[in-house]
Image 1 (cartoon, helix red, strand yellow):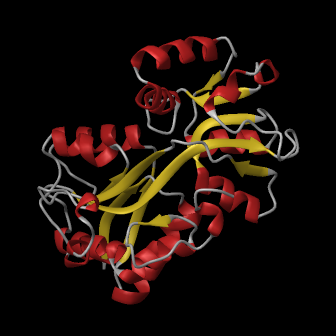
Image 2 (image 1 turned 135 degrees about the vertical axis):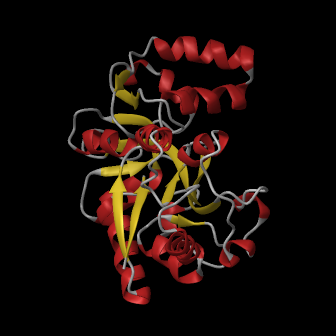
Length: 279
């Protein structure tokens, strides 16, 4: 059996393919997944709905589901496995449930910046030595420049935050039109010594594979939920519900952990201590 599509923001090799394979082994249902960035998924699902031909059964992401929910494109469904989670991981209107969460932190190339000499707090980024050496994603996302600006304003307040950002603008940060994972890849390749507001687990995953990359524990940091939902008028709603239930189950949450993601189930520990508040 094949249920039509899982539109996902998860990295294919890291999580999407292993999750689809495990689900198939468990239930004999094949998952046809399509990987895209959040904005692209929102546009695709919206266009399909306007055309009266919904193709996605399940969608996930940080900003994907809230945007589609606002347009009335998500079905009401809360799996039993999701009901055991703390309230902050469940939609009050039962249109989504969290699968994992991300923490955004600066990431640097350890060949270009000697560990121990990297900036350790927001004010350090204003040091002239970092001028022209930083990048960030220019996309509209929490894992890009708007997310960094938001956490600065929240932390410092409007007046002090704007004063800080005006100084930071003089550091000539390079905007790049790529998603956060690709920005980290650029740092690993040595194109930029340092990037701001990236997923810290990407640095952990890549460093374990031998890449010269590490993340910096700035405080405060932004944490965002990646949530999962069934589409309204899903082609295969029963299989879609079963898949969401699987991702939030203990088995699914352990798969998030083994893939170096941070599961939302409090009973499932993080795999790596390097995903904790310091590395």
